[in-house]
Image 1 (cartoon, each protein chain N blue to C red):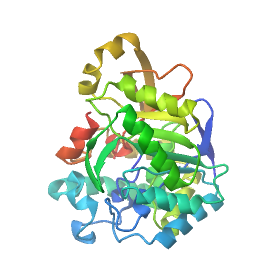
Image 2: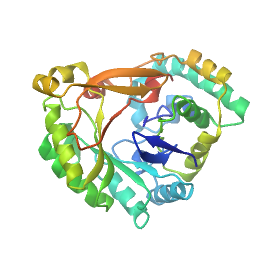
Image 3: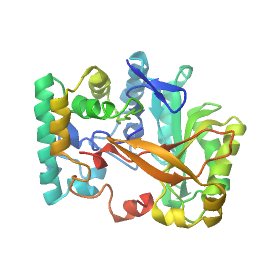
Length: 129
Length: 212
C-alpha cells in the first residue's frame, strides 16, 4: 500500500515552483520541494510527462501505472479531495506501460535518486529507517 | 475497476483512496483548503467507480478525518475495506510523540471506531514505530483487538535498526523473516510475528523512495 504515490502531488507536474503553493501548504517544509532539490526532482517529472504524452495519459496515471507494474500485490493509495483528480487516477489501471516506458522511468529515477529526504529531520526520526 | 489481492485473501481495488487531504483546516494541508462536501462526494464517486479501499488515520486532522470518512461511508460500509492507524500521543490536538503502548492501542481504536461509525476496522496500522515500547507489547495488543472483533488485520511499519535492537527478548522468542516486495526489489527484513492466530502485514515506504 504505497502512500504518497504521486510524490505529494509533485509527479503530477502541476507544481512547477514553490510559489504555486499556499503559505500553509505542508510541502513548503518538504525537503524535496526545496531549492536545488526541487529543480533536480522536476527533471524526473518531465520524463514522466514524456511517457504520459506517449500514452495520452496524465502524469498521475503514469506514476500509478508504474507502481502497479511493480507487482500484482501493489495497491497505491493516492490522496484526493476532489472528484476530478480521483476520476483521473482511477483510470491508471487501464494504462499499460511497455518495457521501454518502464526502462525509461527506472533510468530517470533510480531507487534513491530522489533529491532530498522524505521528511524533515523530526519526521525522519520518527520513521527510523 | 481492477482488483488485487493483498496478503492471503484481502481483495481490494487496484487503486485506493487516501483520505488524508480531505479534511478542512487539517494539520496536513496540500494546496487549497479542502471542501468537506466535495470530499464526501469524492468518496461516493470512488465507491460508484468500484473503489473499495479507503485509508484514514487518527492523526489526520487530527481526528476529524475519521469523522469525515465516517459520514461518507454511512450506509455504504458493506464491501469496503477501511484502514486506519494509531501510534501517536496527543495533547489535545497537538501531536507530542509516539505511543505504541497496549493502553494506547486499546483506547485509540475505540475513538477511531466511534468516529468512523463502524464496529470493526479491516486494517489497523501502527502508524510509527515506538522504540520505547517492546514490539511484542504493541503486537500483542493489536492481536487482542482482532480477537475482540475490533480489527481484522494488523499492519506494522518497517522497524529500523534502532528499534530492532530494543526488544532483545522478543527477538529471541519471536524471530522470523518477512519478505516484503517493494518496488522492483525484494526487501528482506527481520520482523516479529504476532500471535499465531492473527493476521499481520508490513507496510512499505512511499514509492518515491523507490524510484521517483
